Length: 306
Image 1: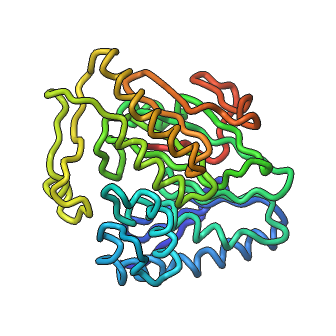
Image 2: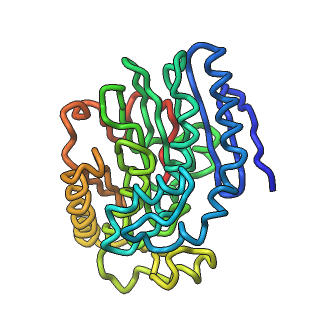
């Protein structure tokens, strides 16, 4: 299995290697952008093996002392360390940490904007005065062939500008690629870095939960035999629930998100479950930059999937 790349028709690049599936875009001086793309590819080629070499440590519960060595592995550990009082492994931040590492290649003179989207976990580079619009797609179960052909119907959009302390966006939920303990369709988090956003989204999504016998949970290893969560029950099916139960689950998640916001671990969080939405208080610079469903602008970065 080798890393592969493809230049897409709209000028974006697609890098893929095993579970790492990245979409990259950059704008600026053509020579600077081309050089950054090439550096990104060179960094990407060996990155999966670096992580595989440290997989036992990355899948172990995060402890007080960092036991991994690589720059990306240590970034994963650092992003998850604030949550070590509960059960968490460094894998909770892997997608964001990978996107963040590749984005480093674009932080140079001549590149005005760049983003690396690793399955919905996004790292951003914004030079002074630049901004970007991120699309939010809350429920992947609603995705159909018509939307794939004609374009997604977004649930919302968030505009991020260079003055905001936000360079990472991540989304987690029970329908997504990663396993979740909760019932959120999506929890989208804005944070200082993509790795921090990834870890925080995982924690908040786990907290969006309610006790109901109709919710189907199974030990994580039964769902995916290489899961780092072992025998911990993860959510595999959530039926339509009464609105009051959904509201209760969202309230629990919102309390956790507010706690993390107060601690500086996230900047903003948007939580969705079965057609209901809640959000942390928006910082002043974001107050006019969040649009609900039927937003008029097209997203630039691409949709954030749970």
